[in-house]
Image: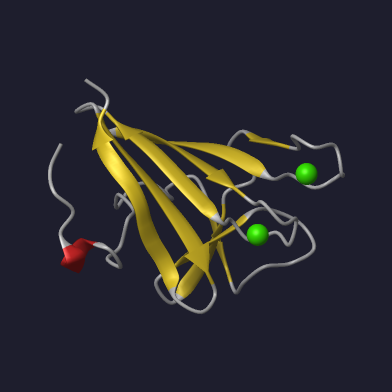
Length: 113
Ligand SMILES: [Ca+2]
Ligand SMILES: [Ca+2]
């Protein structure tokens, strides 16, 4: 496992093609599962989103990119993804958490092998 570089902790966690199938928008609305990306927002709910707790709002979405599988989860039902977990083709995983105040921050990463 590589040591965590402090410079990586708040860098952009997303692969460039991760949102190719998502819809760009101005921000969270009453529908969808929104991911904060840089200065913008993407709704990833059309790409395999599910309502895991049955409250009527999609809270978990799986997104496929060329080199990874990613899962976004909204933990507090506000329509904004709070957790990003990805597993890459090279056997590495990353988990990031989001808050409006600080953006995305790396929680954990490592090798699955
Ligand atoms: Ca739900
Ligand atoms: Ca949320």
